[in-house]
Length: 158
Length: 227
Image (cartoon, rainbow over all chains, first blue to last red; front, side):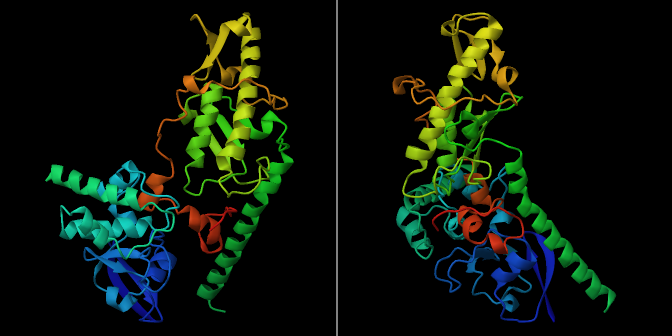
């Protein structure tokens, strides 16, 4: 069985997998205990499995483990905690931008990647950036407000 | 069999035992005899010795905000701060059966029944306070978890009055409700307690609790809800 090494939320991890094409998501959830990334469609079409690979948003359900090897993976758990949330997480809490919470992981991780690249996005840029993340509850307007709020908060700190 | 294989098998057996044990818990709770009959106040709420309150409802919060809304409605009638109220949802071995969750019935049925039980409890707590303070109930009020004279003076906490005991009362459909014009808690946009966990991954989502409990290694509850 092959062994894959990568960094997960800042710590070095090693996982075994029989299949180099096994989705990263399965290993994150089943072997490594990070349950924030969700299995939604399994086809990379809904965004609920989004993680950051070297700071860029990636769909972990269609990322083979061999592609993740030797990279730095960040999941929602790695951004912050309820007591000490990341600014994007804090903005989602302040705007109450979650209902059932299933898409929330992908919304925050995608927003995080967007803000990494574009610190001060327009509403239109945020809409485009999150267009591939589906929410079925109908929290969209709160999510947009949260990302705007996070961008403003980051601007104040800089 | 190799030692390592034996240990693997052994640990799997332990896991299944632990799971079996956890499934029996509701049954044990049921045998504790907590009332579940929706005509009884004790079915819907318990006043704890420390003055906190536990609300029991079969309606579940799947991200709809029911948990905080129901706590606000109970807080308003009981005169207890919202952060002293815990809402226990969904397990009908512990809660009255108010029907399943769906069709926007959480507030109009679930919380309205809890509110009437809380209003009944308020009257009972005022009567208990009247006995202890040796003053007519009409001169007393219930605020901040304390029965105290309207015109000021020493009060007594609800934990000391009725904590850990059954009220043993039928829900009174005519127990007076607070007038909406005097609401202090209902109508305030309080933050939902589930969002920080959802936004940080430190609590799994409602949807997952409902539909993926079988594959979860951390949770044992299975909730009934619409996906």
